Structures are given as C-alpha cells and as structure tokens.
Image (cartoon, rainbow, N blue to C red; front, side):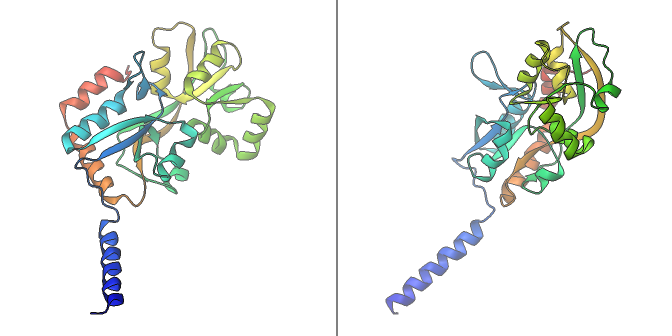
Length: 259
C-alpha cells in the first residue's frame, strides 16, 4: 500500500477516535476541577484554615468518592466563573448557581437540588419595607452577576436598572459579604441576595434584620459544558444517589438554616 494511503488511513482513524471520545469523561485517575464562589456560605466558602467547605463542597466530594473520581476545588470570581467553565479552566460550577435563561444559553445544568428565593436585608431598626425596595426607593447593594442582580435587571427593566447603577441607587460588589459590609457601614440601605445565604449570615447577629422575601422560586443546579454529555449523566446519577442518602440529611442539618 502506498505511504500516502497509509497516512490517510491513520488520519481517518484519529478522526473516528476523536468523534467516539467527544462528550466522554473518563474518571479513572482524572481530577475534575470544580469552580466555586469562595464567599458563599453555607454552600461554598473558605474557612479560617484556608480550606474550602460548605454544603456544595461536601456534596461534590461525596459524589466523587462514590463514583470513583477526584475533585479539585477552585475558588473563582463569580462574574467570570462561566467564562472559566467554557474556557476549560474548570469542569463544572457547583456553588449555589441558579438556573436562568441567560445561563441556559451557554451551559447545561444538572437536575435541580435546591430551591431558594430572594431575601432583602437591612440594618437593625430599619423602617424600610419590601414595597420600598420594589419601588426602587432604597439604595441597594448586590453581588454583581448573581441571580439577584439579574432579577433586578428584569424586574426594574434594563434602562431603569442602568440608571439606578449610574445614580448610585444600585451598588455592585464582587461578593455577598462585601455588600453586607457596605450595609453595616451605611453605604447602602439594603442588600438583596439568596434568602438562605442571608439567613446564615445574620444568624445570631443583632446588627441586621430581614426586610422581606421575594418569592422567585429559583432552583440551584450544577453547571457543565454542553458537550460533556457523559459528565452530565455521571453527575446526575451521583446527585440522585446523594439526595436519597443519609448524607444528604446530615448536610442539611450541618449547613442549611431552616425555620
């Protein structure tokens, strides 16, 4: 057979192999990099020893152990976390990420595992109401690019939202804790964020009080690249096993604030 023909067969086999491997994830000896928001208690945060902990962190570690792969937890700036996923810097986002139409255009989500609403919190003694918030009468602090930020863009309308940012009526912060520090310092009159996170943050702290909760019915899920179809199946399988296990109840008791 001619050398060119042999080369042609070799190239064809490589192409076929690449097609067969598309969408596959091999977990043997693999380490999957999990992107988290490192300032997102109780779901994902860095403790006083520098270790990544939280409801979501322990969840993926349990899934990895059961399904036979390893994970590396990678704290990542929230407004750049999906770009990091799409660029291959991380393999999934498991950090209280709400399913939104905008995100669905870019990534594939696992089955949902948690439901949240948006909470609005103020300083202790505030007379502000949820109606004041919804009318745009308060100076609002929010983490940029989070679902609360996106909700305000939809609720107020993009033009009004942009004007409120320009006028300083909406102040954007890199993390939820930063927005709460701004509230404590009087730089904003309220903060909007996922209700569970707010409740965790203000538990036992008399400096803050809930103004109200907006029923948005958001659900958290794990974000992955669209083409990683085998990973989708693996994570959904592991998530279902976790939610049916005693470990799930242990994690809820350990991390989630409930009435």
